[in-house]
View (cartoon, rainbow, N blue to C red):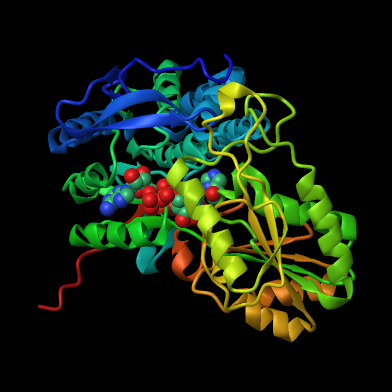
Amino acid sequence: MSTGSFTVSQALNYRGGKRVQPADGSGTEEAYEPATGRVIATFQCSGEKEVDLAVQSAKAAFKIWRKKSGMERSRILLEAARIIRERRDEIATVETINNGKSIFEAQLDIDISWQCLEYYAGLAGSMAGEHVQLPGGSFGYTIREPLGVCVGIGAWNYPFQIASWKSAPALACGNAMIFKPSPFTPVSVLLLAEIYTEAGAPPGLFNVVQGGAATGQFLCQHRDVAKVSFTGSVPTGKKIMELSSQGIKPVTLELGGKSPLIIFSDCDMENAVKGAMMANFLTQGEVCCNGTRVFVQREILDKFTEEVVKQTQKIKIGDPLLEDTRMGPLINRPHLQRVLGFIEQAKKQGAKVLCGGDLYVPGDPKLKDGYYMKPCVLGNCKDDMTCVKEEIFGPVMSVLPFDTEAEVLERANDTTFGLAAGVFTRDIQRAHRVVAELQAGVCYVNNYNVSPVELPFGGYKMSGFGRENGRVTIEYYSQLKTVCVEMGDVESVF
Ligand SMILES: NC(=O)c1ccc[n+]([C@@H]2O[C@H](COP(=O)([O-])OP(=O)(O)OC[C@H]3O[C@@H](n4cnc5c(N)ncnc54)[C@H](O)[C@@H]3O)[C@@H](O)[C@H]2O)c1
Ligand SMILES: O=CCc1c[nH]cn1
């Protein structure tokens, strides 16, 4: 498959184990190929009736699935992981076409996705409660039970991976799931739905409904939905929490960030520069946990900045399906304009563009209507500038000098967000001292933006709550039943 040739004509909802057109809907949406600006799919946003049908389908599957042992669920997840691994390049190609990220990165995203399914397959068979001995031979025990029908709502930056991060632990715990992807990236999650069915999941266990805010609201408000796991922006996260509170539904919120990356003068410079690139330019900078506030100790500011600019200018931008491309187009034109607007504002506020920050027009004529820009490094930044305070969600790194550890910690934590943070230093005591003070859910020492599925991922403060990945996520997709057993006679107080 090559850029400029892919279109989708099949239905993009998935219910009862097959693709379906929605039973009702309000308005149509178009999905694009960001590399060329072409429409690749047109679909209807699901209405209340379609959402209800998806919930009923998931409820029916849940009745079967919850009765299966952990080992039986594990086998199906392992088979799904195997199929994803086998079809990795095809899935990554679809992801690249609809999202714009380079094929090199999309392949890594798909690897992390099947690893996530494998990881939770491993945990499914080991879910257990505890036995507690009580006086007189009485005892109690706890059982970890599924919640029921869970809803996953995703952002557009990691469409397949977000669906995998939500569905793998949900299904491992015995739940069913309905997933609503972003209307910008509706395509790849259908492959996941088909793979679950092929792997042996009962029809309805994993359903897909398409649409935007209205469809999402129907899902959150449905009385038979037991939990909502959301990945997206803070303003939408607030709405989801509000809607879910009406039904006392637990929510997981994976929201935005403006994370600090602290580079001390005793760092390994080459690794620190690589870390800053990883922290800012994956997926065109459209990554929630990016370390976009790069604090550099003054002694090494010039050397570090010079090297980071040199590396940024070398990034190969262009057709995301080419193996050597490292940066593709942004998700759509309004978002591209928004990112460029942040750079204009930064200049007005006194920041200096050290490289990039303007449109990029690839030489290949078929890419002329794509949404490309040159990755940008901003110098002369101050903490109160908009580019330093707000999430840009594009390839824009702000470099900020600092002098002391105490000062940088204060400045790093001076944000309403708290998703991630990073520190580069050769001083192991300092690394742990700094990490202990950072107000962030995910902290990296001498690396950035690696995602082992064994480690929990999630934010502090307005970056959300609840976690994805890691053993702990089992707790977010299950509930604990306590059983108290009397071995003697009832001692009534009456
Ligand atoms: N913390 C994380 O793991 C993580 C991961 C990826 C992206 N993000 C964040 O996501 C944001 C970018 O993604 P986005 O632009 O798709 O976010 P968004 O909040 O605009 O949309 C996210 C999803 O919510 C749906 N939605 C919108 N309004 C809704 C409503 N009222 N009720 C229910 N659903 C609704 C959208 O259709 C979409 O599927 C950034 O802020 C980024 O940091 C966070
Ligand atoms: O965008 C934030 C990080 C991430 C990657 N996959 C899911 N979330």
